[in-house]
Image (tube, rainbow, N blue to C red; front, side, top):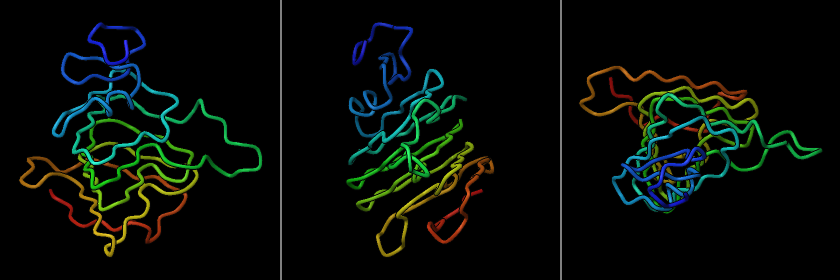
Length: 171
């Protein structure tokens, strides 16, 4: 059940031994420093918000997609994002795929940061990381400082322009 520790076939994420029926429920319950492990592919992942928390998401080899969400008539894409980080939050993500058909895979705002350790991130419509400008004090880091392996990641997008800036790449 949502927020409960009872295992349920509908559970999609876990923090330790506690399972959650949505990724947003897991984010809401998480404390700074927690790792959320994705338990199964999620087909309607959209506008998941991390506000002011420092979290890790281990995609655990799974895929987050927006497959089950129809694009509104007359629109080119969904509005919003798959994962939004705001309020000075920090997200570290690894080990899976995100497939997006909205404005952006990751939306950073309010001096937040994103650390991509590994994974494949695809947006068939627009951006991978949005609103990442040096003047906003936001950070995109690829890999880990003192990491033992070269980060394996791939960005695939209709647009590869100056909409984000990689601050550091560790290998």
